[in-house]
Image (cartoon, rainbow, N blue to C red; front, side, top):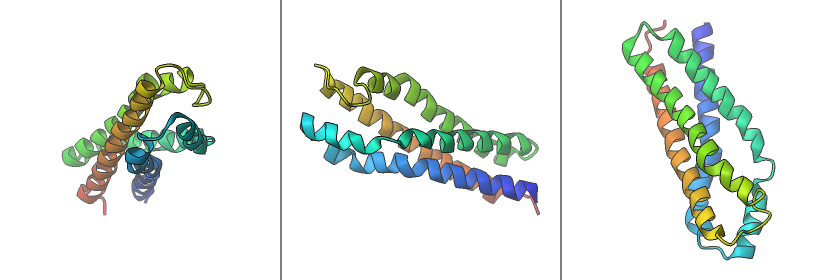
Length: 150
């Protein structure tokens, strides 16, 4: 029963982590064209999104736990490990690419001279994370489907 609960939690948190990432990728084509003042207004919508970090942390922990408990089933283990690495990859992207832009723009409350370059970096780092989140969800689904737990 605990394995089913862990599988459910990994699926839930990985899917919840994908939701805001998918929103970023779907709005990218429109936002990348906005003029400076309009872009600042659009970016204000993200205030409070830092709480998504809790969901991402839970996705990271549950995919790691799923990896550990499935170590005797090679295909399940590989899928769970892939999911964990994809979620970890989103964090690597955030801390190395996205977060420095947030700092340089004071969370998009000011626009430095190079703001267009920073916008591209911010937007496309979120798009890359969205793809990794999608891959993580697919991997967790496969891990759960391949599991031989009764």
